[in-house]
Length: 384
Figure (cartoon, one colour):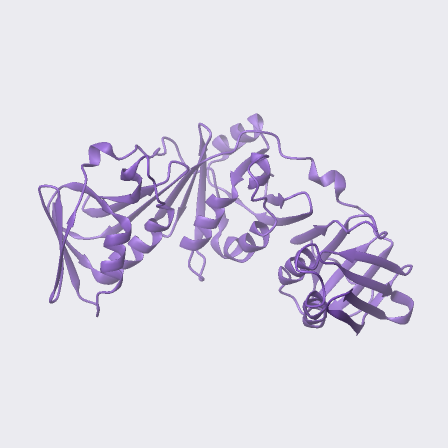
C-alpha cells in the first residue's frame, strides 16, 4: 500500500474511528484501526465488537493494500503533526511508514486477516433523520439512559417508528426523557415491511453517543437501515453499525400523565440557578431539594437544608394555574431536566408530591401557553 492524503482529512478520520477502540487484553487486534484502499479512497475501520465505524477519505492511490495499526499510536502521531501538509502512507511488510514534512514514523502493524469482520449493509436505507435534530436531542436522551447492565434494555434508547416521525425515549427508572423527531422515508416498501414486523427497536445508548460525536454542528442528513438485528447509520461520509438490544422496552407511556392539575411557567435560568444553589446545601449522596409551588401567588420556593451544611431558600416569580404543591427531588435529576430545555422558559407540570412530574420547554411567558411536544422530561419525586 502506498497512498497520499491531506493531513486534515486523515486527522478527522482517525478522531472519528479511534474512539470506539478500547483496551482489549484478550483480543489485542481490537486496539487497532484497519487501513485499506477501496475504490480510489482510503477506508478506516474500527470496532469493539459492539459498535463498528467506517470512514472513507479521498486519497491518491499509488499501490493498493491493507494493514491494521495501533489506533492510539497512529492517532497521537498524526494529531501532533503541524501544518496542513500532505501525508504519505507506505506499507512495507507489516510496518507502516507515515511521512509528513520533516516528520517520519514507522509503526508496527498486524495482518488484516485477524481483524473482525464488521457487518456491511445488504439492502437500502429505510429512512433518514435530520442531523441537526439528532445533534440537539441526543445529549438530552443519553443522560436518562441507565448505566447498569443488569437490565440491558434500559441501557438503550427506545425508538418508536411512526409513519412520519419517531419517538425516542430513555429511562433509568428514576427519570425518563422522550423526544419527537420527524423522519423522511427513503424506501417506502422496505420501511412498511419493517413496521409490519416491529414498530419499535432498542438502540444501545453507546451507539447514539458515538453517532453524536461524528455529527457536525451543521447537521446534514443521517440515513438509517435495519437488517438482521443490526442498525446502520450513514452521516457525512461516516458509517456507524451496531447491534440492536434484544428485549422489550418498558411501556413508559403508561406512566406519563395525560393531564396535570398544576402548571407553572418559570424562567429557565432562574430555575437552574436556584436549583444548583440548593444542591450545594444537600448531602453529597442522595440529596434532596424541595419545590414549594403556590400558583395563585405566582411563587415557587426552592429549599434545601442539611444538618452539617445549613439551609438555602430561593423564591422565584412564576405564572401558573392549579392547586399548591410541595414536591421533593433529587437535585441531580432535576438539574438534568432543566438543562435539557433550551428555551427561555420552562413548564413544570405536576399532580401531587408523589406522582410523576413533567418538564417541557415553552417559549411563551404567560398562563396556559401551548406546550411543546418535542421534548418531555419525566422525573419521579422522592416520596416523603
